[in-house]
Length: 535
Image (cartoon, rainbow, N blue to C red):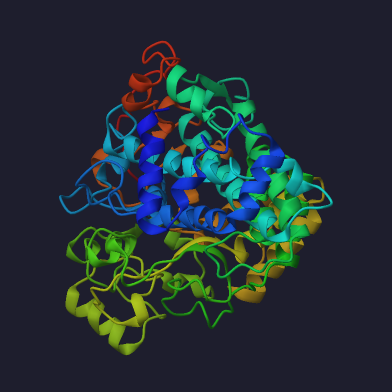
């Protein structure tokens, strides 16, 4: 990894949070003892707090990686990038669509693409910020009987967010865990090897090794958060429920079904969130992390640079009822095939415009705006504009990273896949009937059919929240865009585990990393998919 990345993190954090630069791993690294490290922290606890606060700040940094590109606005850009590669979020290849390369899949994966460099830099910058915190605290001390609850909370934040970032990297730069455990994944950089790696380089670790790091970090984060009595300031930080939720996601990919079931249940039991009611989702919403169903999110304020930019932010590209790139033609549509599968009794059908550009979820003013603006059929109206102000140019919506509804869906799938299809089906039907569609029933009878039923509910419930592509990969579904509404050139039918589904290690990495050869150590060039006949 490049030494200038560490310098970048220190410089950024010093601009936003006083003292964070002092958390660099060099003065608190392996050359001092654990006792010395803890003594330094005790004398300067505000430095640790500053380092912890810097990590969620990096989730929404404006153009911090690749220059003057309007698709570079932090982690939510990676969410939209991933969704754009799949089947259910449709958009057109027009000049205002900054995510047209992921839609086309013809070059976003290559070594110098903006999409690739932005992903790599965003996630490793967040990892380096987390390493600054993990390098300042002794892990064994904070797992022991004499641990400081506040320092436990701080260290758990860094561990959980580092695991979250490596989980994203692992899924984007290699095929899914099951069946590919020993394949090359991404370099592992922690507080233990950062200084050496900056000089000598670091090879790609295997998928298995990356997931071992992820699980070790999450296991310790869960332990610390459950032991600590520190209450998070708001939902930008990780609590015990969120840590269980992240771990459940990872265990789903690993097909560790019993563990995923237990973690999903723990997340539900420990969370202060509850599922949004039928009435609460029968209107545009999902804009504020204080909403009752949010567990974790990216906090955005009106003063943030991504907001003052006007259009370099998630609502600009994703919103339909606010000003931005979407409002001038870069709309986000639902797959027509998926939309047509939604029963009329389901509140979520109104999350998108129907074939006549109408939605039962819109009030009179919102529908009038849709009509006057000639917004096309099947465009999303799931996400409300900031403060519900139609056509606002203040795009300060918070961004959802985890909602409690996902935990119920994980619980249903993992319960079924752990061997109790009937119980999994019951969880699924109870959730959907209680909160989304009172008429819902499924004919699923065995574990695999329940899993399929859950996937179809995930496609609706979590649409546009950056999770759909990872479901396609972990379930080995492939990408079938027939009947979805994509432009003719991008109607693909891609087989599971095709090379086009993952990215190559970017050139900026292997040029700076002595232990990665850009040719022999990289993922092979994929074959560009050919369009197929549409339905």
